[in-house]
Image (cartoon, rainbow, N blue to C red; front, side, top):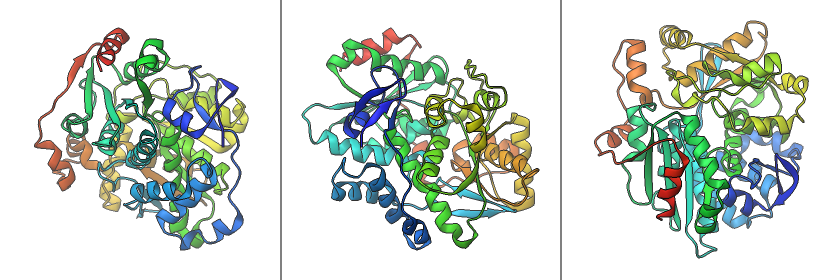
Length: 431
């Protein structure tokens, strides 16, 4: 399988090159040259397969031949060590993606990418430097996924004061091969700085740079797995299935769209955002207008220029009506998000985190005019990761899982930096 750049389909590279480069030299995102559906027997037996089994078969179908089967199976087995259960919430389902080590859906992508980069790092004599921008959960998932992986060094950029204390502690207290840069600015500033680093000739000459953001294709591959897992758990009830996806950088939704191209019979995707409604606005008006992100209580979705929109355009050949057939977009305010959290606890005895609440709202709005569907919303992080917000909204104490408490007792260690790329470049050249 070769991969092309969304900016130039003539640019073709191997899986190894796509993963190690992260971002194409022309600033495009890599996409697989072809996406063919899985065979019918795979879907007939889907409900009988374990989570690691179905994940291996999906990965092998997409990238088989680029990495030995034995090595791929080992990476899958090291990635899928926890479940993604479907939980009934009223007349719909929550797909809980927070049962991994950092209690966020990004554990799937980070662990798979760490395994793949670790495999490639062992084949060369140069250390891999992983740059990652985070608005919250990506940093913790990547840092913990790569902690002490031989041949790798991780640099996490995050906006100062714009992630929760627990999220921050999960990647600023690790030490070892993990460095946290506290940026004066927004997530979009962090993401811009990372992209500038990949395009800088001096940095690329000295360092072997790659990205662990969802701009890296290897992050998206494992995010497809849990869409298939949801269908497996539904079994015979997997009819007219709709996924509501809380969206920020749109990697999660893009992974779902690719899963559909692999044959997963998804009826519709709902792109649910907070006030950063760039993609819902595009779906409504046909105008894509990136802008500075707005701070909300669903902070991991505070993205004003979502990178994976380039992949979405590529999948639909920049055809708006074609995209609208598969994706419905909605956006919601903080007040609407808070109301949903209160009502779901009251009516269904289920605690939503602010991001899952946005997904839930998107599903409920879609079901107002589409009543005969099987609705699933993605619950992307454990509510405890947003303890202060959740406790204030629900007016009750939220006990933290042991995994989160363990991080809170550790000391934060960061390097403060402006949002000027020159400072980041000088820092990285010291490596």
